Every structure is written in structure tokens, then in C-alpha cells.
Length: 151
Image (tube, rainbow, N blue to C red):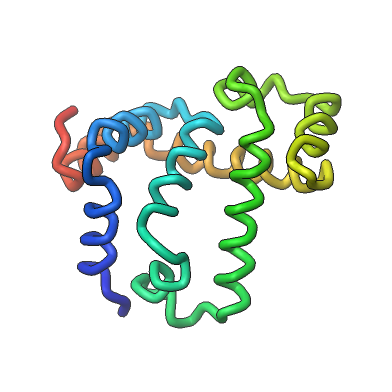
């Protein structure tokens, strides 16, 4: 079943002193305005919770993940952060401007292949679609209430 209580405690601990940032990112996500910069900030908050293996163990399905799957996910997130570090603020705030010439420059700057940058952009677009599904007002109220925030 996982240890959701401990996971929530770790999340609260990682967010200490960053409550405004967490609330801001949450509101932006729920509004459907989700950028690579928001994604980067989420990954930073996740990294602040400790080793990914320990976080995965706390999830209900985490015990079913193999060590290699957890390692691959952790490495992918690390690579995504490096790629985003090679982007300009304008690209992070408006990923739709990223074309093939940008992809090549970003890949060179991050020391990765262009396919890795494209993978990040695919992952971002999937995440953005998921966030848009939360833009329903009824869903927003319910989530904000659970998070102890006001609409």
C-alpha cells in the first residue's frame, strides 16, 4: 500500500520555507498555464524530498518498481534538469518557440543528443495536457481544498 503519510510528511518538509512557491506553481498548473520553468521547479521540489528510491518506496506502486526502473527515472530527471539548464529563460517560459535550431544548440550546451531534448519536450507536452485536465473549476476547488488553499 505504500506509506503515503510519510510521503506527505517528506513533501511538507521539502516545501518548508517554499510555501509561496509551491502554491504559485500549483495555481499555475491548475490554471492550465504550465511551462518548462514550472516543470523545472517541480523537479527541484521533488529532488528536495530526498533520494528517488526512498520516495518511490513510499508510493503504493513503488514496491513493484525494480531498482533499475527507479535508477533510469532518476537519471532521466537529472538529464532533463541539465537540458533545461541549457535553455534560455524565454525558451523555458514559452517552449513553443523551440525549433530544430534551438534543439541543436540546447543539446550541444547540455552535452546530450537532440533526441534527448525532443524527449524532454514530448514529456513536457504530455504533462501539460495532464495539467489542462485539472483546469476544470470543480476539480480545481477540490484539489485546492485538499491542499488547504483557497481559490
